[in-house]
Length: 418
Ligand code: ADP
Ligand code: ASP
Ligand code: MG
Image 1 (cartoon, rainbow, N blue to C red):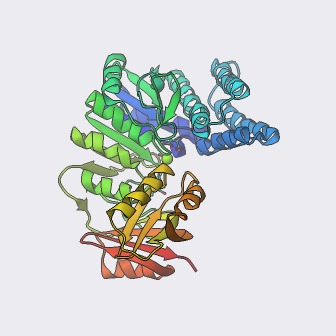
Image 2 (image 1 turned 90 degrees about the vertical axis):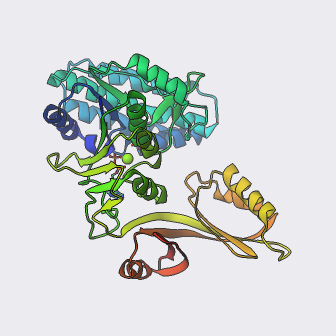
């Protein structure tokens, strides 16, 4: 069985959905499991609904719900006749979401987030599934919340592999084309959970592992894995081959082409992963497998924007010892601040963190009583794998380098833009 994943960019409009049908027609759709994420940038749009609901802002709530309804209505109008049953199915899903928002009394942001954001994936998959059926590609739509079972850590759930594998093996008919939602899962209480933003790639990895897939293809708006994000760097090169380890390293440092958790499960079973272009589906793309580390060997650039660089020292100028560092990490963990770089000296400890969950200010309010703390918000962390002198100069020219760390294969430089 093969696993295909189509992300938001591939199905951002009716033409995109039609293109998916053409890819399946050319590549063969039987023995295939399709993981699909929300259409276009719909996850961001559903996040606006959640924020409006939490803030009790009725006008914004109506406006943001209307935006998501109009977006999906436009796509289905471009794909189906007016009397097709999809119109009713979409209306029912929106009705369910609006009802949930009206009845919900929980102010727990992360819980509400997962219960609402999942509609992006539920809508996209029913639309694609019905369209493919119309097109003549028969398929089974499944609710992934009954297959990918997780703990109840909303917005960052961990997979219960044993339960998930058992359910996937039981309920997926490998001779058919099956369509599931990426990114979302279900906990043992029947609540929806999510695997972290951009988590649909990971869902593809989960299914590939559980189904012992022959290969996985992630269809993207780029030719494959490039040596840098084309949105950030002018000249990029396609990597023809790259090892699992190298891909994990790149994703770990922030290459947003593949979700970092995707690779490990497929590496464990040595399942090859292809990253191919949905616009240019005759190109071979990138093959991720074991063996060759990277081909061609070129410096690879990764940037993580909008980081916070925190410098911490003891209040009494004593040395930073294990106990201090353990206190710091306890708080970083408590406030979900993901550490991307660490540097320590005898009297100070610096960390560069993501502030995705917007908990930095709370972290600061607590840690400032224990340590002397300074911070710089809004810095960019550049990582260069397989660096050369020229590639590092290129980064240094982008602004002032406020911290750098170099080891054998990887250079990391924090830049404050002018
Ligand atoms: P999806 O539609 O699956 O959600 P994403 O937008 O998440 O796709 O990922 C594709 C994007 O990843 C590309 O458009 C590109 O801008 C970005 N990207 C970041 N780093 C790389 C890289 N090293 N190679 C290719 N694309 C990259
Ligand atoms: N729709 C989700 C997101 O935008 C998951 C994904 O696209 O992978 O984060
Ligand atoms: Mg994505």
